[in-house]
Amino acid sequence: MKVTNYYLKEIQDSDIEYIHKGLSDPDITKYYAVHFDTLEETKLQMEWYKNLKKDGTGLWWGIYGNEDHEFYGAGGFNALEKEHQKAEIGLWLLKEHWGKGILKEVMPILFDRGFNELGLNRIEGYVDHENEKCKRGLEKINFTFEGTMREFEIKNGEKISVDIYSILKSDWESN
Image (tube, rainbow, N blue to C red):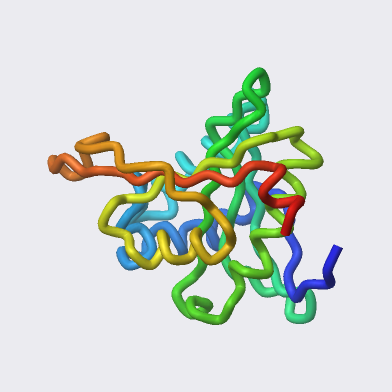
């Protein structure tokens, strides 16, 4: 595997301040289904991470710099279905790390974990139809656009459409 400037460490309770810093920022959570104004509220997210692992329905990691060991963001899988060998990928970065090419380096690490360690064949990305930046990012790393699910969710009382992207293990291995 290619040498990278980042490593992943499984999210732990002690990471709550990092998680809160990201998930309390309205720019980061603009297209997310979660937002936490207080550290106390963020405990719900920490419980969610724990339950994913306990239930076998996903796993999330903190993204750290190899040299500075600084927290950059978080990424992982949820909605993992072992029978169908698929999961949904999620990822966010702290604002000060946007636009630095971090995702291009981190996504192959996540793909390796998903395809080789978790036994996935398909990784899905669900993106708010309005989130052009995220959609461009997925396309740059070889996700395939599969369609738009119209008025798929309700967020803040508004119906939103969601675009679905995927990458298959065979797609990833052929690059």
